[in-house]
Each structure stands twice: as structure tokens, then as C-alpha cells.
Amino acid sequence: EPLFSAIPMAPRDPILGITESFNADQNPEKINLGVGVYYDDNGKVPLLKCVQQAETMMLEKAAPHTYLPIDGLPAFNTAVQKMVFGEGCRGFDEKRIMTVQALGGTGALRIGADFISRFSASSHIWISNPSWENHRALFEADGFTVHTYPYYDGETRSINFNGMIAELKSMPSGSTVLLHACCHNPTGLDLSDGQWDEVIAVISERSLIPFLDMAYQGFAQSLEADGRIIRRFADNCPYLLVSNSYSKSFSLYGERIGAFSFVARSADEATRALSQVKRVIRTNYSNPSRHGAEIVTTVLSSPELYTMWDNELSDMRSRIRQMREKLAQDLSALREDLDFSYIITQNGLFSYSGLNKKQVEQLRDEHSIYAVDTGRICVAALNSGNIGRVVKAIAQVL
Ligand code: PMP
Image 1: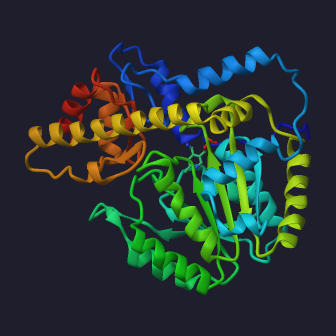
Image 2: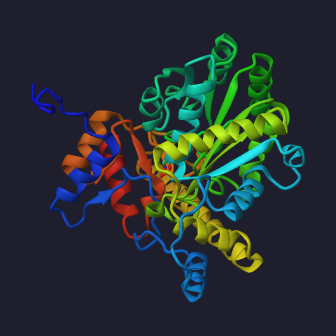
């Protein structure tokens, strides 16, 4: 039989599918809230000033495009580790933490999944219900059985924390648990400090392996505050896996830049594990690309550019917050019968708007406004020019 003749069509990616329909829409007033990208108030993906300056500096150096080491740019890995784990994390001095450059957050998850699938006695992983739509497929591709733990309670529009803890307590030891470090995608709901304490206690009691996915550091409270959770896990669990991404926080989507880190119990364990992580990389893509890593390293290692970045990130965060407040306020004005306060308590780029599939279809068909079927809308795609139309349309379909 010819090689490709029996290949079935793969299902369409739900998010990228929305963009395809959006692009085909002829309405000049169309609005895409289905994306996972930060837009500025002019509806443009920003080029951060700190990035532009770093690139100017890089261009002036006119350096050749040599290969990077398998695990990436050493200065990048060191700078990222400090940022993700916070200065003075105990694991640093004990040389138990290793960080490797990755192709965005997805690439970091892929390295982590490949690595643990080879060395963990358990092939079971739990992700939140719901979670980023690629988590399940990504781990299944490595032979994991993917389970879910309760997370979102649609009735109260809050976290089903008791359900989550009960599920954690039922997992066999050695299982991996994927957690969103902040700005949970898609719900925008994050655990409180006290709830994290309980989660950490159960995870260490039951010898589960925590895998923290941090795609949005800096979008909840601040770089420092959002990163603190990583440090708390690192200080309290013998093992920890972390993926982090600079796609959103540096607006470097297409550069595919992020990192995978892990914490082991000893320097010796960490060294052996790193040698295997490098094999994973070597057999996948040999070594990562340079440009994004050099931009991030240039910014993180210059106090002046770092401050500039911190301010630009803080501006992005404030703009999203303003949009949340306006969305909630203006919706409340049109629909006094409904409570929209949940929009304000959510963090990050997204809001779980409470729209059902039918209402999302209505938004699309009657208003050319595109959202994800689950009702997830990207608040970071709202701006002073389009929010009025969005509010009216949502108030109408609800
Ligand atoms: N994890 C989560 C929770 C995400 O929302 C995303 C996508 N924004 C990623 C990982 C992947 O990030 P990247 O685009 O850097 O691969």
C-alpha cells in the first residue's frame, strides 16, 4: 500500500482554526479575541524598546552566526535561572538546579516530557481541568497517560480547590503533576498563597513530581512576585521541573525562546540528569537558535535595559487590568442583572467569560467577534477602539 494513502486528516487546532476563520471574514470591523497574544492599544503586537535596543547593540557587534552549545547560550541559562528561581535560592549554591535554553515554552515542555518519559517509573501525568489545549497532546505524544484534576468550577466561577486537593491525595506516588505557575490558561484563576502551601504539602507528602509551567511571568503581579512560587517549590520538594517562556513577557513570539529547568536532590544527580537532557536535545534539534537568547541575555544582564523591560512589562500588565475593569464596568451598566466581578479577579491575558459555545457562535456569526468555544477571550486583544463594540455584542448574546 502506498505510504500516505491511509493517512487520516488530523483534527484542526482549535485556536489556530479561529484565526483561519477570522482571516477569511470580510467584515472590516471584525475582532479576534481567540488569540493568546498581547496587543497594544493600537491593536499591534509591540516591539519592546528594550528588545529594539538589545538588537541594535547586537547588530553593532556584527558577530558570526556560530552554533550554540546543545543546552544553549550559557549566559542565557545563568540569567534565566536567577530570574526564575530568584537570587539566593538554596539549590544554586548546592548546584542542584540546571537550566537549558528551549524553543519557547512549548519546547521546554517537550524537553521535560521527553526526559521524564525516559527516566520516570510512572507514565502518568495530571493536568488541570481545563488546561492549555496543547498540554494533553504534548504529553500523550511521549506515551504518558494524561489525567485531569478538578480546577475550574463553572457554577461559582472559582477554583474547585477541595476537588483539586482530593485528587492530588489520590495520585500514586511518582506521578507527575502539571501546574500553572501564574495566569492560569484558560481560566485566569490562580491559587492563593495559602492554597499553594497546601498543594506543596500534599505534593511532597505523596512524593509527586511537580512540573510548573510559567508562560506568563510578570503578567499577574510582577516578575518578582510571580516567580516566588517557583522558589517555594524548589525549597520544599526534592524534585521540580519548570518550563518558562519569553514569548509574551518579551513579545518575542516568533523567536521561540524559553527555558527548561529542573531541581535534583544533589549536584551529582543534577549533573547526570543534565547529561540526559542534553541527549534529548541533541536527538531532537541538536542545539537551539541564537537570536532570541541573545536578546533576552542582553536585556537581563544590563541594569538599564532590565529596568526598561520591567517598566514595559508593567505597562502591558496595567493595560490589561484597565481593559478588565472597563469590560466589567461597561458590561454591568448594560446588564444590571448579571455579575461581572469575576473578570477583575482573573489574572493574565485571558478571561473565562462565561460565554457558552452557542453564544460564542452568535458573537462570530452576528458580530464578527471571534472567541474560543469554551468562552475564553483574550483581554489583551481589547483596546480603546474595539472594547465598546465587544461590550455591546457580549451584553446582547448573554
Ligand atoms: N504554556 C502555557 C500555559 C501557554 O499558555 C502557552 C502558550 N501561550 C505555552 C505554554 C507555550 O508558550 P510558547 O508560545 O512560548 O511555546
